[in-house]
Image (tube, rainbow, N blue to C red; front, side, top):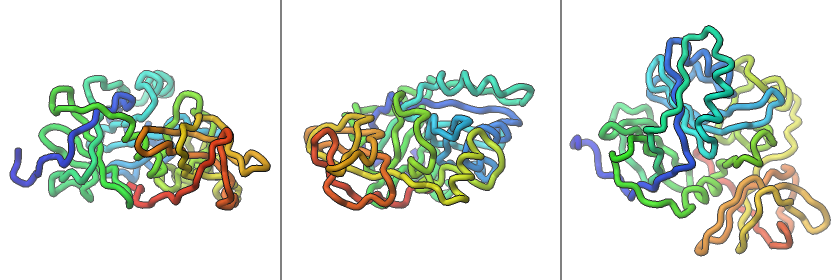
Length: 292
């Protein structure tokens, strides 16, 4: 190990619900720019950004990390979406572009808590290499953590007992299971907090809906962080006691910390007593520091 790298601060936790897809070729960036919601052309080699894949109606299919490995190579890290469900639909839009889209099943995604040093030349410390694996900063203002991307056997991996999901929820990073895909606009999922979409870069599927909502100021709902002592069902309604005011998008529970959930709710709803299926929930502020 090079002298300028300290050991990883915590055991790595395997994240089998995360997959990796690569885009390789001279048209890789142009293809991604035309298909995804964020400004890929602004991404320099050695950087990564949050990005989103939308339906033509502006609903989020997937939220993912997009990594610019070099001038002609991008990697996408996809929480919750199988790689084949990402690759196959995108293949239909390749046409004559010189880009190869591949699932990368040999790459393992793991998570760690703490600050993992990358090489000194890593851009902002957000994307670096350690012993042949990539390390991406996933920290927020409230917690330091990172993603590790490498091949099986490169590191010893522990079992994630749901703590990574809970930390995502507490950071306000929405996790979209199959039932919640294609249901919400980027504004409803508060993806501006991650700077995961652009309203200025030009056309992409769903861009007209996103831009219209932004420029007309019609974003009425966004994410709220909720906590309960009992498990909350995804898709359940959030009530203020007299009416339903929102819907649970994602949730994660364990015996020690209860259940954390993200719900799409009207932005003007006050901190009045809230409940989900008669379970009392409390609202908590979302941290910053997520933009990459």
